Length: 284
Image 1 (cartoon, rainbow, N blue to C red):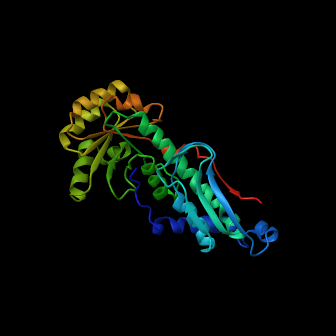
Image 2 (image 1 turned 60 degrees about the vertical axis):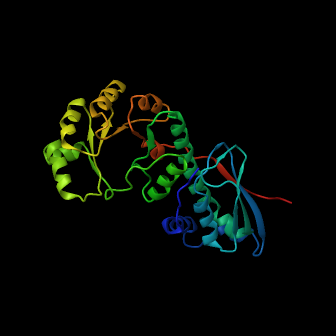
Image 3 (image 1 turned 30 degrees about the vertical axis):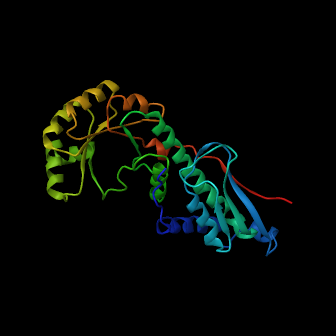
């Protein structure tokens, strides 16, 4: 699959911070005490259950930032589907920094692979239907760029990255603005022609209010399947339709069958289970 580029400028500061958190004030007391200077190792990172790979460059950065002499050879790149026991990468270099970086590297890799795997499951659940699977802004603070990358590695698409790259008028905005019409009008007057405007509605009556106003997309929040089907019919292609609200890979197929264009799942990033990955030194 065509996996997007994840540039080091986006993830190296995050990895540096995680390494500093783990190393604390004095470094790796255990490895420094137990492993003689100059000992080298060869180790393999392996998946302990099947899944979709994402985040190998991030994991590799944890090793290389501690010691550029460490080499990381990728066996199964991001976007690959792997079986339990598959080797993802081989690490070679000085043993001390490999040990010191191990947990940071695996923490990133396991979480990103878990998100990619969950996204793959949701995408497969809607195969044959036009609906796309998207994430939300319900991400781990500080890790949004990485987690949204993992969603794309899993075959999904991204919702907005932050508050600045799209207008999403939600229920509290509508209350504060004095109604849907006032909120949409003010948004149109305030943003440039490249900025999309989406409006969240909770009921069919709210959708009827929105239709004449010309938004780019409507977020159909916590609607039943019957309501979603009715909403899609009312919109009739005039704007993109997005279903959201408590959805999981187990429920997306039925939602996709209502005809919505996008299904967004905060679950992909806020409740996902990490993929179990481990690093083992060669012996003998």
